Image 1 (tube, rainbow, N blue to C red):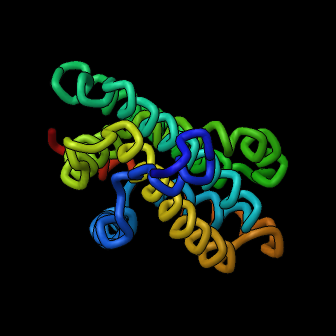
Image 2: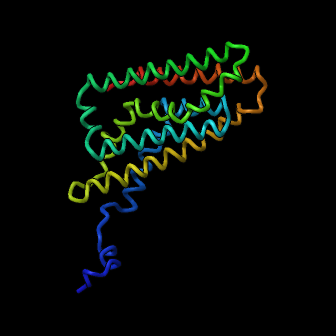
Length: 221
């Protein structure tokens, strides 16, 4: 009979309701979804191309923080509630679309101005917040949690703990993929570009964000 007052024995006997095989299967399932082009990925790519690695990393952090909020919403049941009301879901989606269009407009306007480099300072400070809002206002992120994550939860176990574990795995892989993306795309642009190159990079970044808005507008459900 084990000693119930022994904390080590309690930890050893605790059932975490999440085995390695299931976690690996979940990771294999969500990785293609993470790697598929979407608003978050395209926003990060646009910032990395336009401003370099540090900008891409700030955008990555913002996008990941948005997914952290999504995971917290799942834990308290809000994401399922949003997905259950089509009008609310559509409203969030269109707010996100118009926000991306606003960002694209700013980038393209900067590309068309002779002094586009000076205009980058304010944008650089807003990259984290812009990345956060881009992922937060993307209902596709909520759908991943609502449609995919529950398939890997055992209702007989600790549902909350399993949801947190799976959400942490999803956020971890998002961070890994987007980090690689930031470094890769930053080699196509960044601080070493001339002013003309910067303006071209801004134009390309604006085009990527327009593409992201298109992806979001084309999303259904």
